Length: 234
Image 1: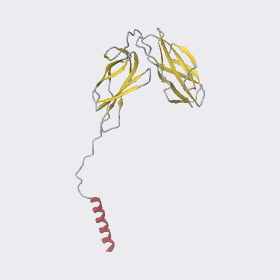
Image 2: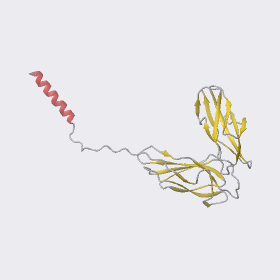
Image 3: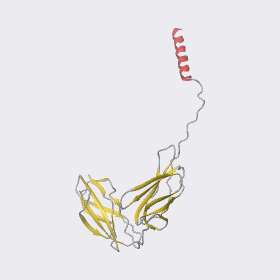
Image 4: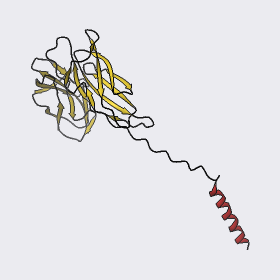
């Protein structure tokens, strides 16, 4: 009889504990916030000369950058990089266009990051390049080349030879050749050859970090020098 009484008391205590403070009001679980989607760039167009805008001075002009409306997006971060200096302009806006003052006769690349309130997720557009028109410019230097392989900061498996690959673009479509500077110095100055292709093989050793850059030349002897790319061989 005592055993039955004890079990009954324990059961009652357990029920009271599970019952808690009663009805909590039936609060709904908040719906997850959708991640923003990437936008499509509109203007300035890719690999073109930008000859629209308002001239501010002999050195600068105001260009209206525009892009499409992105789904599930509250704001946009526009990034504009001067390919000659490496300096960038960054602005956050809630519209799909923004006028920005940039240097004339200068190559740029730009992209837009979509953002949404309540989430840290973002979406990045494609990256486009253009030349902002200068005074009396009839032929533009090529855009600085971009590394394709090995990717910047990559670590590749042990090998004796690596195939360097890059991409090159020119508004005038008159690229003549590429010269490759390569070595273990973080500012490479040793030329390993000139080619009309966008790839070149070179010997490497294990457990070594290499640096390389590309000098692009066009038919008017205009040149551009890429950023320095690096990779490690295991």
